[in-house]
Length: 232
Image (cartoon, rainbow, N blue to C red; front, side, top):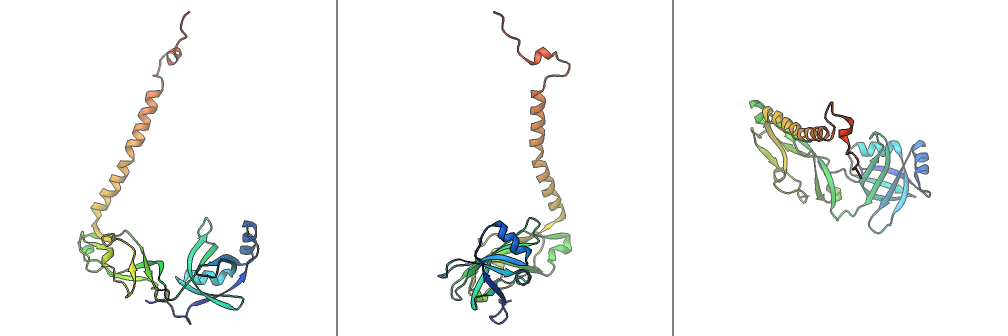
């Protein structure tokens, strides 16, 4: 699916933000605003505030491109980074990058796995290694998702980065042989978990043995734990 057209993009109203600092940012968020910056190209960096509800709708819709109106002037920007609070619920800050429609940008696109792998009929499970990929693409051609059909994946077969179908004119920024997903048996999954758990055991055992070696033997005289002073 190709990115929304100019008429379909979210339009956010922004106001110039004069002050800086955590206190002002907290006050803005309490008043239903979100601090943001617009940067890139030749426009310099501009600190602004966005309406929190509208910004959340645009961001949570999965949109990459939005239009921001600042003092009546519309800027076409890419949502470059979103910072959340420690609970990952409230948006605290947004970075917006000005875009040139003719210049490629780097974006991360989620993968949408479609179909049931053939290997699952033999008791296998689909193990996803990477749920999103990074790619270079023209701003107005950014896809919402990349759909990947995994129906033909048989037992022990692997889906590599080179197997992902890409829209024309885009470039995937991953090694061609990078594993994206694979069909494995349940027994293999259990073995991997057991191996990972066992790998941590030697550290615990070694630490315990070291502590036992340093501790004085049970029932030994207190004087034996320390060296007696030499006689003159």
